Length: 357
Image 1 (cartoon, rainbow, N blue to C red):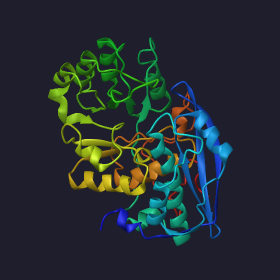
Image 2 (image 1 turned 90 degrees about the horizontal axis):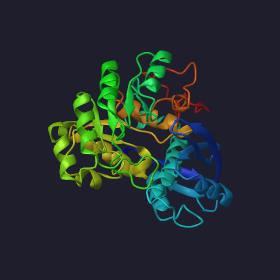
Image 3 (image 1 turned 180 degrees about the vertical axis):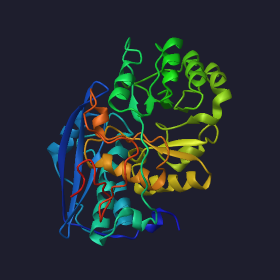
């Protein structure tokens, strides 16, 4: 049976729902806003988090309130299909089409949490997997002219930290050599799939060659291979190329220019629980290395992606560090990698990150 099949027929009873906003300044020099979705039924509450990247969209959602008629008796699968028929953006189409999946995941993850709590069972028990300690990396973009200072400050506060870094065209051979000498980089995210965002990094064959050769043990995520020069630069390193931003389904994996050895699976990118779990099954059947990624979750969503990492890919370089690592200056007293297993007794929740209720 598929992993989704183990969950699909869980009964789900919804009586009402509510929405609440969260806000926090994070390390990428912007104020992150998200919306917590809470589904209520039979004396239980299931929570999820909408990670849409637009503050105004969250304001519109919260201003509109619970406009959809979600109440009723469902299965997890029938509710998911019902969600797929709804327009979850009440005041018009979003600027980013991917945000539809982000918002849907907020509702789907809340439904999964509620169904499991109503059944009195935790996620790992139902999918027949044991939670294990979660290895994580800290994701960051270095400021212009800062060199390796941010990385070194993090290492001073938290020795042993591993990193996922976003190379940009202003990186120099000296900087790469300095970072490589620290031996702390597990992934370089080239951001080649992004368009019209603050993190866009156009294809740069010189940069690609520099970081691929400078970090010979690191995964190389999301290159833009539309140019011959970029393809030539990375051809010797093809086994280390992974993908993230363009992956929303198994069909997207199958449409890649070649079958990768590794994949960044971000739950919110998939929208539906079935699309996410089918992708996990697909990658496992093909022996692909999978690691998890986050979207600057501020609430229960962070614990949920850590939970998924603990049962599907605990030993990978997961970009699921506790939220304090994303602060402009890392908080004191943060847990170090690996995170100990922390599932609560019932539901889709991780006891850390404020999700223990």
